[in-house]
Image 1 (cartoon, rainbow over the protein chains, first blue to last red):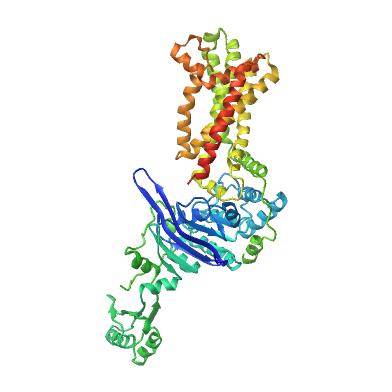
Image 2 (image 1 turned 60 degrees about the vertical axis):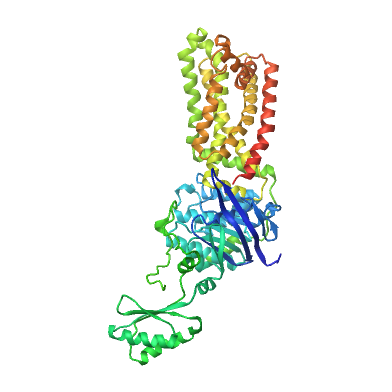
Length: 343
Length: 268
């Protein structure tokens, strides 16, 4: 039980019995989340992300395995866990019929604030979340972004040391998504530990210090974003030459310098090459070498494989493009478009 | 935004854990706020007793009791019981709505006395019961309802009815926890309550009923409740029936309360 771990789980299992079948929603998950960091659970719909969060937030009892949040067992010491964590669900878990202020005041009172202190706390939170003007309105009149903000504010009434964010930006427009990201960054800066579930690679890449990729209730890979990318293989260099006639020569130089096979794109100007681990340093010399040969290169880019490719490599199938049943597929935060997958 | 956010979230002193009474009252207050914001929810409570009272009094009053005046004396306590029992369905309905909207997940993730959301909701229901009782009795008075029990008798009758209603609420809380949608709660509850209230002594004296039906009416808890409430309002309290109702209420609560809380804790 290392004291620096905010969340620690071993072999978490949760099965849901259906009419004919048993769904293994979570099938043996281990987690170790260091205090003050953001941990991303990345996976498609139905991977078991929400079930993991619900077990850690004491809403669900694990069928097997153990979990501790800040050293408190989630089953035996559930109340201590509840005092230390905040949860923002996939759905806005505030009362739509009440106003924003009433919702937060109710929670503040439930956390034990006296009436005057509760009002001060709520006022400050509404201000900070840009909801002061909307405080007197029923939450059902709020926009998607406002709803998510009031929901986040609701999770922060007691300044939790561990915050669970279950798909915090699903269905939000890019501006609202950026607001949520900014909030998360400030919280983490101030020492909050965040467990984030997401199906957006961008989001995990942007926010999370470590990422676990989960699929069918199992963790299939874990590491930092760059570790995950590296585990799939090399990065790739993409370039376009100004003159079509120069492409063959450029390909020859690239191949010699990097010691890797060059792929000629269907665009007669384009070529790309995978960068082997040991050839990473050589990439730096590629552009001057091309210039020395008199080849004009208007476009040059060097990138690690995207998390899309990571997921493809790990599961053998791409992330599903649409999320059935999601209310916001049209406003999905920008999944990185990989027009030219290097495989 | 960054600094205000920091200041707003920072917490110098953590408040002490609130008492069960405090959290329960907070949930009761929430129920009142919901009535304030969504007054339409009282529509059923207001309209159905008026329709039933007027319809039965004027359609059947003369035929059943000789005059509408005589019938309203018999009918009103029964209608009151029927009205309040139907209002208990809302307990399960609102609970189920909270669950399906995700609000309950937040409540269950709070460090509070676990039953307080449910008990607080029951407190809030008192308002609905009171409104329904006032409307029904008020209409009865206009239509000529006068009983020897006087104000005290009527109040005691309502009180006994509320005791039973709270005990019965646990049935609907269990239903609200188990059933998939708020409308399903409504539908199933109606199917249970319709025969219980109609196959009783709410509308007519069971003396003329066929023996099979009469046997059911005699054991029907609603009949016992109606007889007890009638007695209190008429100034002739029937001790045996009152005790029957109180015992039934205690048994319902003792058995269903823990079952409901158990399901509530295990709710996935």
